[in-house]
Image (tube, rainbow, N blue to C red; front, side):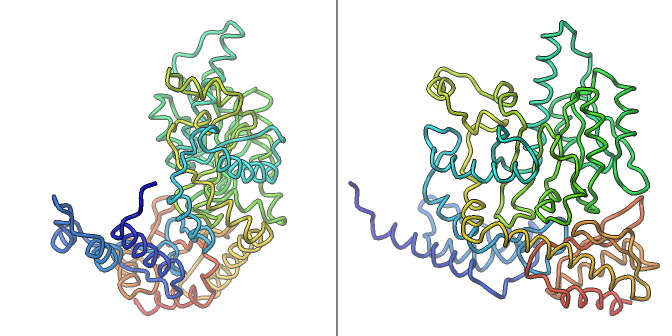
Amino acid sequence: MHAVSAESRAIVEAVLDYSRGRALYEDIPLDVPATPAELAEVASGSITAMGIGATRALALFGDVLAPTCLSTDHPGYLAFIPSAPSKAASAFDLVVSASSIYAGSWLEGAGAVFAENEVLSWLASEFGLPDTAGGVFVQGGTIGNLSALVAARDDARRRNREAGRPDPARWAVVCSAESHASVASAAAVMDIDVVGIHPDDDGRLHGHAVAEALAEHGEAVVAVVATAGTTNFGIVDDIAGIAEVTRRHGVWLHVDGAYGLAGMLVERMRPAYAGVEHADSLIVDPHKWLFAPFDACALIYRDPRIARRAHTQHASYLDTLTEAPETNPSDLSVQLTRRARGLPLWFSLATYGTDEYRSAIGRGIDMARRIADEIERRDGLSLVRRPQLSVVVFRKDGWTRADYDAWSARLLGDQRAFVVPSSHHGEPVLRFAIINPLTTYELLCEVLDTLNDSQ
């Protein structure tokens, strides 16, 4: 055995001390970004032939670099979709990194893969998928959507071959115009077309619109993507209606629930997600509303064998893996090398229990409805739409985009909160994305108060 040097021990202890302090820090800093020029002036020169040493490197990160990275777990981080990992999940992420587990294959990471599969099986059951469903944790929703659509196209090609039908000149994917940009990105990578459908007045994609698209594009459609919680508004499509159409036409149904599908874990919200049980594939991002650290997307297939046919990489040095009976996580997505990114969620769920998760998610939904009521009571503010999940979109009457931008900058500069403008049908609007259990009603009201202060 090789003894660990004193220098190595000191480095590890220093990093662990810093991590311990950040993980347990109650007064989480919001911090502010910096320009490339500003960072170049104060942070350049850290990579040298002899190194600057762990003490100086850690000080550089903690004192200079970290304060320019917005804390997505701050209670006032209300923009985009925040991340609020539990203390257990954040702490265990250190274990994952320190353990050097390769989780791309069962052979090399059996225990880690087993634990990840426990979580995937629980999620699949919650979403109404059969016991045979399975999947993998990938980097994020973009990779998850891409992997699912690649599997869908491979399955369509196989079915065409078996039926003696030629493939279309161009494949296409049908989705809502409100679908996440990653769907279009996946289509671009795959070199297939996107058939975007404008949702109905309720903001939802419905089965009748999907039926019309399938009637027009026919055999070219490789998959239909329904959204379980749009990023901008948190709206759940008419998944039941869409599923009825896709089943009738024999078309793959993929549900993009990166942000919002976690809401289905709350019993009273389940009717809004009716039809998810018919999905051929789906995604949900634990680093969004399941309180896990970056980065993790749970990609689940109704029939993992289809994904395995599409994604398994074949090479002589991989024969030991591909010829084994166990399914390797790398066989189910476009990624071969992967860390055990599902383990922090596993540890957090095992630590706190699923009831605690349901409660935390439900609290975000309740908070969104409560602050929406407050917005409606205030003069000069109006809702764009009542919240369905935990996203609240509203406007300040008479304000332009420049007004919103200036207010947002002041709010961040004062270290109160991080809220950025969005848009709806060309109109600039504001939105709260409420994920963090530490976000209070009082804080949200204080943010609303600043809108009047900015007049």
